[in-house]
Length: 274
Image (cartoon, rainbow, N blue to C red):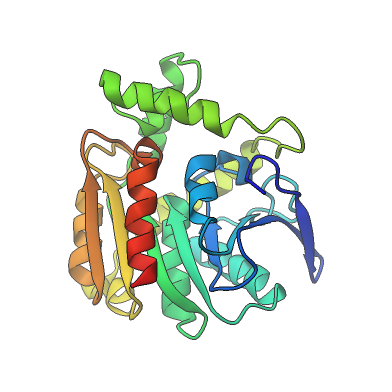
């Protein structure tokens, strides 16, 4: 089973229906994937997800209002994290690890602090801490203005030929699923999520209280030239988190984990298996 072919399942929690896909073995600590701004399950890189699922259970899901999940997308990181926790508890899971990319990395920080009983290890890729530096709307607007064949090429990758070549390979992988794809996110999602991200970064966190409250081991991964959330965010998270490791990939932008999928998976496996 792969991300491109996995059956979409549904979980009802109260009046919300969550869409999700399960990959990998049935035993072991599940790795829950928390997605980026406007992203769906089909926005993940199959090479990353499929490789991670070779050795552990992996679960991708759509939070409220995303793809074929029902409900309205909230406009705060905290509520998105609460909804994600409802999904995990609804599956009956008592211990999980997290991989949060971009907006998902912000949710991961909240979940780690609020639910230390549930969260084991945390991977935060391309994110910012509460009160961090962001240029979301500026970078997104610039990416759309370039007229690229896929907006993720200027949004996630640097202008170098090597990075763009890796970006084109990523786009090919991420668009490979031909049946049962999630619908793209519309304005209702993007506007709420943009408000959540901007609000998260606008509210300063005295003495980095959120980061300092994360007791779990954390792996922080970032691109060297991330224009959306500059790499200083990763360094600040690393410095303030008790048990953190930091990796910054060269000549890479916001989608560094997709530019170096094999390297990223190897780093994740080493971290998760320690």
